[in-house]
Each structure stands twice: as structure tokens, then as C-alpha cells.
Image 1 (cartoon, helix red, strand yellow):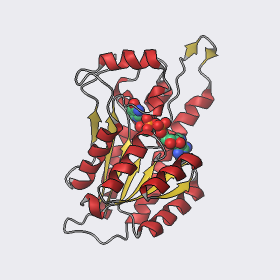
Image 2 (cartoon, rainbow, N blue to C red; image 1 turned 90 degrees about the vertical axis):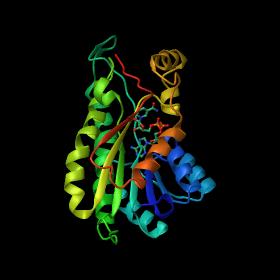
Image 3 (cartoon, rainbow, N blue to C red; image 1 turned 60 degrees about the vertical axis):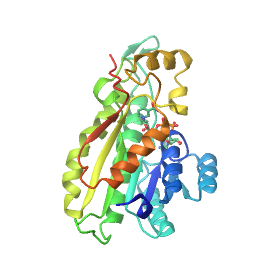
Image 4 (spheres, helix red, strand yellow; image 1 turned 45 degrees about the horizontal axis):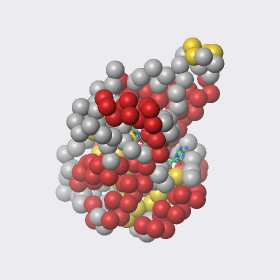
Amino acid sequence: MQITETMAIVTGGASGLGEATARHFRQKGAKVAILDRDRDRGAAVAAEIGASFAEVDVTGETSVASAISAAKEALGGLNAVVNCAGIVTGNRILGKKGVHPLEPFERTIGINLIGSFNVLRLAAQAMEGNQPDEDGARGVIINTASIAAMEGQAGQAAYSASKAGVAGMTLPVARDLARQGIRVMAIAPGIFMTPMLESLGPEALADLSAKVTFPKRPGRAQEFAHLAQTIIECGYLNGEVIRIDGALRLT
Ligand SMILES: NC(=O)c1ccc[n+]([C@@H]2O[C@H](COP(=O)([O-])OP(=O)(O)OC[C@H]3O[C@@H](n4cnc5c(N)ncnc54)[C@H](O)[C@@H]3O)[C@@H](O)[C@H]2O)c1
């Protein structure tokens, strides 16, 4: 699939990696629908780049189903999804404020893992009637994991578990959807300069940047978007998690 033929939903497209992906895809000629719970920012980005927008929480069952069918109609079809909606939380199991509360653990799994699954299952349903190409391909789904799926740091039990879930479901979902000709991939970013990373504070940011092997800086959201384009265009990539991290290995 060429990027110019791509009709993509980008969740989390109001900010950071999702926003960069939506902008990059539009610039390369793809049609884009942004799904995000941030109405102000999502609508502003969509208006600026000529995308459609739906205010939606990725964990909602009926709201996501309606947003996907509205996006499909607005784009004239649907053959790609890039799931970027996500949150980061941090709590030690036995921290200064006591035991790890259950709520942030459930919320992190709910948005990062179940939200991604919710969008992908309904998007796959919306893609199964697509006209197949000569390989039988009907679409591609890209989820966002994290290197924390493999090397979570202290305080990241919830975040790492959610991202390990995203990484772990990549192969079985690719196997499930092979019959429909839908490829499934995940991107595992290291550290990328986005509002999420900036929320960790300048000290943590400097500390993490110093650990990157090369180039010694956080990734640019544009570099993530470029990889998402490559995955869409390279029809033999399937069922794999690709790290994009400047060889950063967290300890
Ligand atoms: N920035 C990094 O260094 C980094 C590293 C590894 C993985 N990631 C992952 O990349 C993804 C994007 O992160 P980012 O850095 O761009 O963060 P970000 O905070 O800049 O953007 C996240 C977007 O997701 C949206 N969102 C959050 N919860 C939502 C929900 N329930 N429903 C709909 N939209 C929701 C937010 O409104 C926001 O627009 C996340 O899954 C994150 O875990 C980021």
C-alpha cells in the first residue's frame, strides 16, 4: 500500500507521536481521521491539516464503533490504523505514600492495552470488506508499545504491563487477521520528545537522554511517523514489534 492510497485512523492524534503521524501522513497525501479524547487540541490539529476528528475515549465500546464508522465514511474507506492514544503512570509497589493503589494500574491497562485492542478489533471489522490487492491485503494496524514492555523501570509496573500486553498480542492478532489480509505490527519507542515525555520533568529527561546509545538525544516524533509510513508501505512486515530507540537499553 502506498501512503497516497492510505485512509488512516490515528488515535491519540491530538498530541505527540499521534499528532506527528497525522501531520506526516497528510503531508504525504494520505487521508486521516484523528480520534482523541482531547476535543480542543484534536479539533485544532484536524482543522489545520485537513483531517476529520472525533472526540472519543478509546476504551468506549459504542463510542469507538460510531467514531470508526464515521471516520470510514469521511475518508471514503479505511485501510490503516495507528494506535497512539495512551497514558503514562508511575507508582512503586510499596512507595512513600503506601501501597500501589489498584486504580492507576487498572486505568493504565484500560487505556493502553484494552483501548488499543478495542480500536483494532472494530477497525478490523471495518476493513474486512475492503477490496484485496494482489497479495490479498486489505489493511494494516499499527499499535504503539514501548521499550518499557521489555525493560520497565522501577515504578513502571502498570505502564510496562500495559505495553508488554500490546507487544504480546501483536503476533496472535496478526495470525487471527491473516485470513482477512490485515497486517498487524507494533512500534516500541524509546524516549521521544512529546508532552508525555516532557511531563517527567527536565531532570528525568536529561538522565534518560544521556542513556541513549546513539544519537544521544530523544527521538523526534517525525521519526516515529516515518517508521509508521514504512510499515504501511512494506507489505511483508507483519506480526513483529519494532524498536525505535537509538539502541537505548534501560536498566
Ligand atoms: N513519548 C515517549 O517517549 C514514548 C515512549 C514509548 C511509548 N510511547 C507511547 O506512545 C504513545 C503516544 O505517546 P505521546 O508521547 O505522543 O503522548 P501524548 O501525551 O503527547 O499523547 C497521547 C494522546 O493520547 C490521547 N489519549 C490519552 N488517553 C486517551 C483515551 N482514553 N482515549 C483517547 N485518547 C486518549 C491524549 O489526549 C493525547 O492526545 C503512548 O501510547 C505512549 O505510551 C511514548
